[in-house]
Length: 116
Length: 119
Image (cartoon, rainbow over all chains, first blue to last red; front, side, top):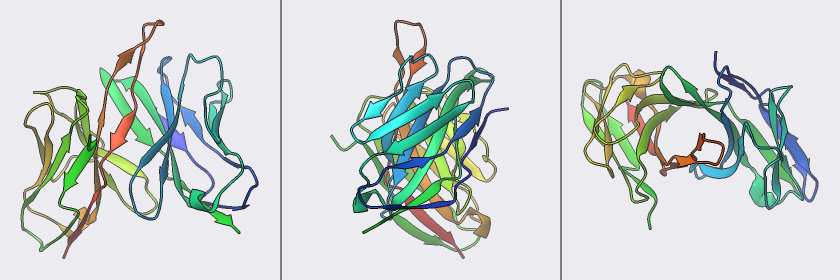
């Protein structure tokens, strides 16, 4: 079964500190992709970072990095030097090929609050 | 380049009324999707269209219909709205890219969402 699990409903972090948001996944597809999206209070979904299952190196995009541990089936998002504007809901998602087509599955999200 | 656009942004319906949510993308993507977002449940796929002329059911298709009008547009219709369909609806589109390894990677880009309330 395809599944994404985010076990942290809410997180707090002090401004300028780093924070890790957890995500574990389960899939039988050997060629899958993992995504992180940010949803600020305004409601839009913003793509942050992507990791392919065959990628040898962890993905990085500016202050965002993805700690990909394939054997553990985890894809944690690390935000370095947190800013007040990072306060938002964060969703982990997986794209996997199943039943003849690609499907996307989203986790339930983690609400991050950055403290001044 | 507007990306993915959705109309309307807000809508209030009475039980039993019908309406169509519109979605358009200008990124020349092949695939388009409709999701609903409910508190504490993340996003759930309603319907998707892998390419122009094709549509398939997602996780929660009951009570909805879709039309892939052309490559740019993908609409979602509620024939007889119910209070359980109160939600935020997102449209998304994606492209597929073949890599040297032979597999494809695609990132979904989302519209701003439609907040629907059914009374």
